[in-house]
Length: 172
Image 1 (tube, rainbow, N blue to C red):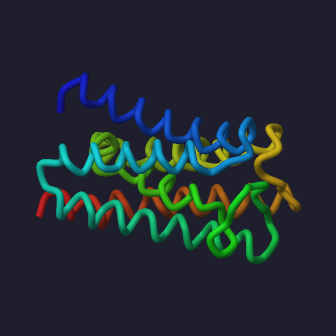
Image 2 (cartoon, helix red, strand yellow; image 1 turned 120 degrees about the vertical axis):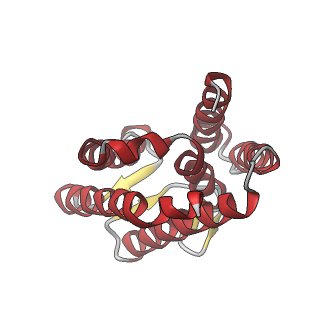
């Protein structure tokens, strides 16, 4: 993979995240994040060398993430201040999780050589990304200790599952 492609994928995900967050905060609207995320996903899928495998990886990661978020919101560990929800989650989570999952398909493959570091980084950066929404007013965390215990556990398990099982989809 070229450095340019890596740059565009990382930038596309970051732009999607920013549009989801600041679309809600500045415009009180899900539309900027939804449009940006859909555009990013379409471009990624159209440029995928193995679109079927990419879709499988994105689907599996997204389902796990969306299910985890749904459970934590349902059990009131945290909730999102959002203009429009599908179920209990903001509608832009429908594009944010798949946009994040593209990183697993295209960028995070190199982590298979550094499994312990990958699990540690995932356990730190995943929860931090959610927590970053708290001072902005996008997410309300009702129990901070339980939030971090569950988040660190989920992100470690997600990375372990990815490194030991899902990554095999890419190469089979």
